[in-house]
Image 1 (tube, rainbow, N blue to C red):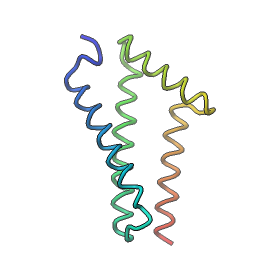
Image 2: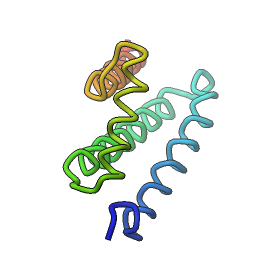
Image 3: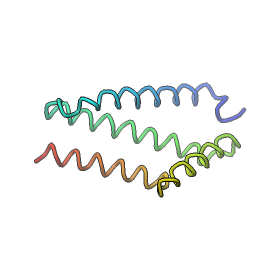
Image 4: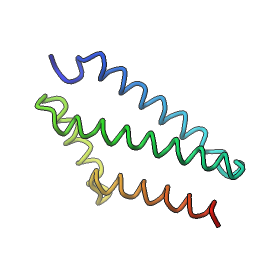
Length: 105
């Protein structure tokens, strides 16, 4: 069975995508959130990013050809911006850390 043939993988991918879309949409109102709302948003983003990072590691560890191609496509796309997947996750984490620092001050 291929990586993407797994119902669990399909469900997790769908849930990650939906969560990301929902948080992105919600984030458009971030400036209107009160302090507690901003904290909750950041926590949800951190949780979603952790799930996404784990999901990507599964791709990287898989022997499935399609999973390996997906990783290579992501590397190629990010490479066009001079970035690697690890750098992308680090940058996202730094952004969330700056957001935390802003609401603490």
